[in-house]
View 1 (tube, rainbow, N blue to C red):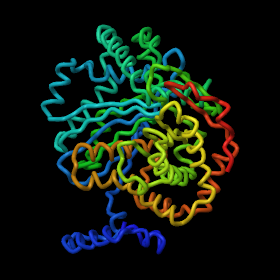
View 2: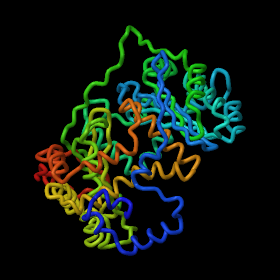
View 3: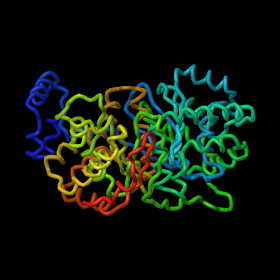
View 4: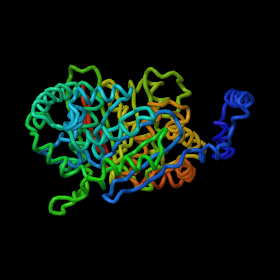
Length: 483
């Protein structure tokens, strides 16, 4: 707080508790030789180097000289690129990725990874897919070679497809037990009904039973193209070496589309609507309410992130009482509004969902819905003092990624940075540095916050998804939001 106070002026400085100030001063005395200014810490982040091959593949890396690194391929494809027929194909491929390649059967692939003391992993989202490896920096060449095989030469054997079909069906059953995931998938289904963003990442169980090997091959041939891929590395990596490895293993990646038909994402229309799954046997209700937010590259994204920081989050296990970070959190604790809530902003290339997800008792649903919408309305009279607290909270979220990296947490830190680089290159075409994030956050004024929030909230009909005991839940209690 003491380091950030000059950014917010006297209003920010006056909010620092005396105990915190004294503690920071004490730490400064102990670690005086290592102290740097706030501005220096922003500029101290390693530079992200970016190179493109002739086929359109981009290579991005950050070198910190650590003995470990994370390297991976981030691909601009996910469930939003799928149709009703092949929804879930990307997730199916993720399950098959490490079950053997044309060169290495599964046992040999696993042995190669284990002999390096490495960890191979992957994930699929609505717009991105990633395959990455956490390993020692000296094993970077072997890691890139294995990743190239996994992405370009997956065996996709019929026997393994049938085995993974059963695994995926079990996983779909397990996901049904995660009510937060169910609720947020339902929110997408109603908010973006009739568009690809309504589809879940895992896909329906029917598709898991019927997808064929040819469906998966067609999916790869349609979407795994060099211009939509970024080879990313963070940690003890040399960029020139990484570029050389990319030329060696990925120069053969196709950049041509069948019939020159480059897939173009169609706009996904937001619909204010409501969907519920009533189950009176459940002890609690899980509810998400959201309006349409900004896309990833929209300049409104930072003010909306600040706005979400004002609402914050709460869990019944939190301590703090009246000292909780937001007005809604304090209210939730004082009058037992809910068991937990969290503000969220799910961003996509051209749209987003800005909302609040909460878990509460059936008799508190309408009260919580009222106060959640009331929290949105408070953005219309935000003050400099409240904004200062939000800046600290929001910037610390961004800074935490860099802190984990700088403190030499080799596996989790390098993976977070690698993921950040990959998604930034796909979304923005470049890595946004920490100093630029700081400047964008600092530029948000109460007037900007009021104007941006009014744009997204005023007289907008929200989308609502609810799961659980909803006896008293009525759509008549969900009016237009007025500010």
